[in-house]
Image (cartoon, rainbow over the protein chains, first blue to last red):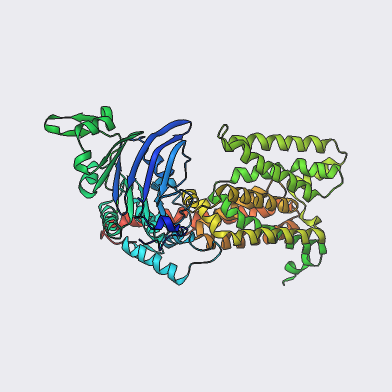
Length: 278
Length: 294
């Protein structure tokens, strides 16, 4: 069991004697957003090192789930445990990659300025980055294939490059758990492959990851586990277990057209992954 | 030869005025970078106008005007946060209501005084040539404090401004930092009251920062450049006002505006002419040899 990158307190001796608890453990979680319930009674466990795709129609509560997992939204009921401990004990363990539209890309920052923010949490806020921090930032940029852009203004980047900057920042946080909200939406093929490749590497390093996506084919072919969400948990398991006509009809409702021989067509209002300019 | 530079400096009031104006120019410009980047221009203007009742009350009680102004600014800054926090009214609506009410209250209070005409002009448009050495020391002290706060909290303010979501996943006290920035802004405005007046302080907050934004690639560079533009605007504006015998606060703001227009037209990468030139060049390139990266 390794907790090297984490600022979490040492485990109590009795707890340490047991097997490592699930990385993420949600028990009957409900979240309200703007006074209305966005998620109701969601329970699931993500074991150590699992990589999970989160799918569901627009407004299914995918972003809400992620925001609740990092403590951005309060729970109206239920508990979330990370490493068997409630939220608030885990500052650096969880990295969250929000949707790209959530920040102002015209800010006067370079690519490396943004990625180094991933290091801010783990040292005093007053100290500048150390040589070690710079090394980690450079490594994160290199893994995302954007080291040549390090000194570029973020406003000059394409959508896919911006997404890779965000992923690089999450890598610089050296997380145990990585949450990404629709990282593949509106990005070019190069960026998409770069992100997928890093996800494979992280999987080998036993980093737990949850990725929301509109691309059901991607979820079915590149992920071991899929979680289907529509305001409540519809299904959770391997793609073969999850992608059944029944589940998809329940999750996508009128958007799902079930054809003969188990073929399902799903109509989503947003085009899932358009190729952006690289 | 250089007597046109030195002549004004032979007057004590000009020396003090220049020092005060340059300090205020730098201070407003640096914190103004956050005002520009966080789209707080309206808030800054509102804060400036709403210190009027504080000044009036302090005047009526024969207390210190700066302290009265500071009290009013802090009450309004916190009041706006309180009104808009629950999302019942939008923030700009809350600002609009509070600022107009405070300004009206100030005018009502001041109009009960006999000498209001002169004093109101000074508060609205500044009286930089009336700066005493005590005022100068107070300006240096408060301004230095604000700059030190911005320097020490550079990273937290940057993250909260650029990516509030990252800020809260890193467990930064977002609400506290936002309020602190408002308080620093309120202090800045009060310090600037005597130099450019409440009517024009918003320009000193926004214009140098906006100019620097067009020229700089990174936030530290933007802040440094804004400070330089703010200081030079104050310097040139005050000389202009001395020789042309015009209002000093307005002259300072007009110089800053001229700098902005120049940057807007000629700034590399972001300027208007640069845009034209680049699109023209790419048009001639596509007709000639294609595929040369710029």
